Length: 230
Image (cartoon, rainbow, N blue to C red; front, top):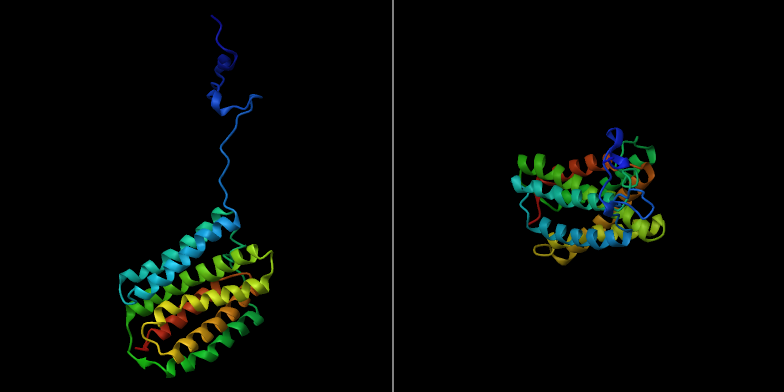
């Protein structure tokens, strides 16, 4: 008996019938891609859980490495939604003079923060583990994920996205401050973190990279780890 045509001369066997269209063209499963709106329903709850985790997470032990997870997870969600690395500002790029000025402008708040705190001395886990883990994760979540996501949801209006992202950045710091900070301290935290969110977000938008801010934020947290406000 003559073999089927697709088995002659060593040809590959036909795929199962359920993998072919009625025209005989092989079909492959399409890659599932999230819409920005669907991604927001995942990213925003991650931010809420991230705030609660940070409020309870010790800053001087191996558990501090858990601070990396929310930022990595949120950025992965946007990658699944079709955002490119350049859309998330995850690419190397030079630091412009304007970007440097925006980062330097946020240092105006540092003396006030340090003067109101109490020196605790060097704690290497907090400075060398928690500070970079938290700094990198915060930038992954807020500048590399939330800022481009809001820009997409708001129809490309970068300034509106910048303001909303800065408000959420300020609100994210509240769970850690509410249990112990006085009302004036809470107001100061909101004002400082909102201003930093505006400056840092603009720098990332201006230079197209979040890497400089990751290093800068990690260094600031390492300095702040030498003080306490309780």
